[in-house]
Length: 171
Ligand SMILES: [Fe+2]
Ligand SMILES: [Fe+2]
Image (cartoon, rainbow, N blue to C red; front, side):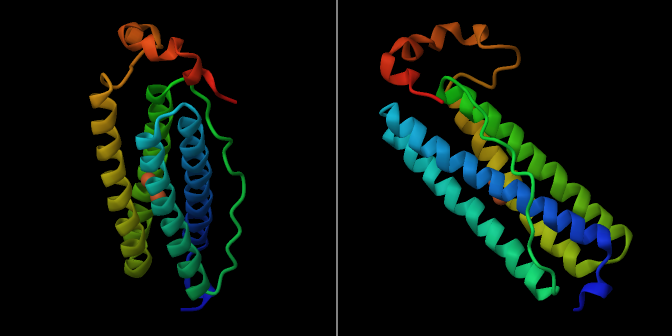
């Protein structure tokens, strides 16, 4: 398929998808190192696995863009979000995964509107992966005491680890 057969908005969705996936790579890679510094090797390993999954998504997008004859050009990576503990990191990740879900939902919907089945299926497959990530993340958050709705104070009961100096390594 040549570029001129692809709707410009679809190319825009692909570019933003690449930016979001690379943002996730940067975020989860950083978190793997950060929680490693906190001594939480189990979570570090989990973040490393997520980093690889997001990298594979980025690769799929790059391959897809090349097949369409488009040069990948991600821009505006979001800075890594900061939190003082694992729960806070995961909540930022839930927000990022939600951005991905919203983005792929909108992209797939637009492809349906313009009858672009091929690109629609591409976005739909990524949407299902991100929905899966979101569910896993929600389960992990619940294991840690549920998703915080308002501020850190609600989780005061879980704050003992936060007073551990090793848990303060941050950026
Ligand atoms: Fe992803
Ligand atoms: Fe994801």
